[in-house]
Image (cartoon, rainbow, N blue to C red; front, side, top):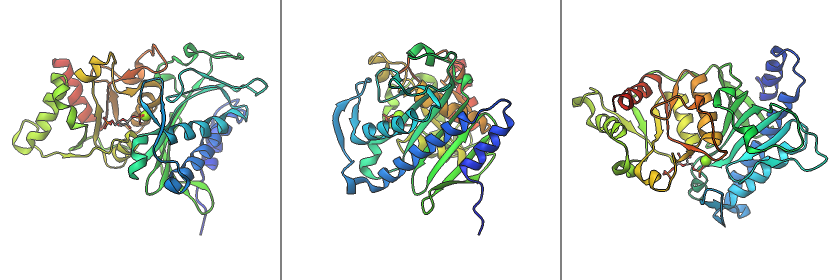
Length: 337
Ligand code: AHM
Ligand code: MG
């Protein structure tokens, strides 16, 4: 039996390709892998260790926090703040930028994360995930502010997610394709199980929360109506539908067998004064980087997500991502009005 390529092997190899690399980036990805292993173990134990249910608090976005949102956020901070690889962090679960305590060595990278996306699925034992994005700190200083993080998605150095499902799978891009690593819990290593992942360009599977249909804008309503019309409609084929309510699981399905995932803007969201449901810095940008690196497309409906100049740390955007030719149809419908 051979071991295979571990995540550590892979990132050390990647580091050799980068001139002047110091090992800091390798160290950072290792820290993230460590936190994901810890989170995988907590997710798996679930009710045995009393981590299910609400925490009794709200995050900055006014959403109910689950106990696991808070616990996994602490796990990420602990794993990332001590080894000198990170300049500062921002999380979906924290209002402001997290600056390292005095005395901790500041590294060169800014990390944003959603420590447990789809956390409401924890209580019903359905897949959840951690999403992360890595940016370069443009200057070295003691204290960072939101402005330092407000870089478009095209500036990401790396992005990934860890899916806690039947297997724990880390999916990573450093801008050179997409690779998948499955956690072998017996000896605690992520092993490469797929490399050069490519999303099929065509699909007949869509993912959307259909209960919001009456609130959608006309182009999205038209797109889904035409999918539902099936073989006898304008698209000339039958569509299948999935909705896990965990973005990580939806993106993983799309990377595996194609599909389109969307959380569009709708009247209900607009009435709350928001521009979308999903967060640009913690969800939309990292997932867009992965999807594009796998040959897919990721847009708001009208523009490429990764080109958006962020205005705020917790900014929200509409998201349409997945199989290239299908996302193009949605883009065309939005352009037609
Ligand atoms: P979260 O970050 O608070 O967990 O919310 C994000 C999740 C996505 O994973 C998922 O696509 C969506 O919210 C589910 O929304 P809905 O509850 O409308 O089905
Ligand atoms: Mg989330």
